[in-house]
Length: 113
Image (cartoon, rainbow, N blue to C red; front, side, top):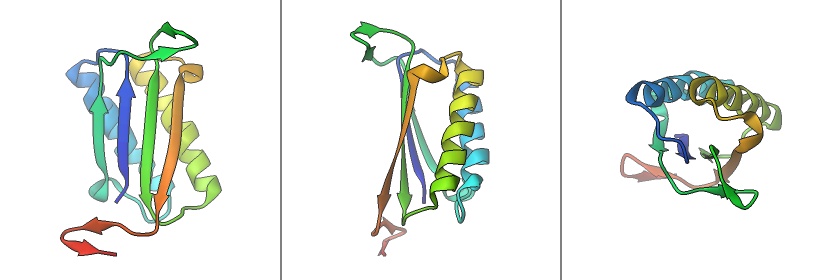
């Protein structure tokens, strides 16, 4: 199950949140074995965030994955989702950071793998 945690300094409208959720769900399929049907997403907006020593419109995205995924697939998702965040929120790509955390073990549905 992928888990995406999106944190931004911008205050997002319900429509912007829905658009981000939809775009993330669509694009996660760029990573083999991942789909919207098993993806959990958190959107945390209106946060006090500082970049380059100042407040600005920015975003930090953490993508947590069960097992290691191919570099090229993660690159494709990062590039595509960064573009989607810019399109949906107006935050410039240079002010969006995305990283991956990959885990060998993961529990879901009461089962530990």
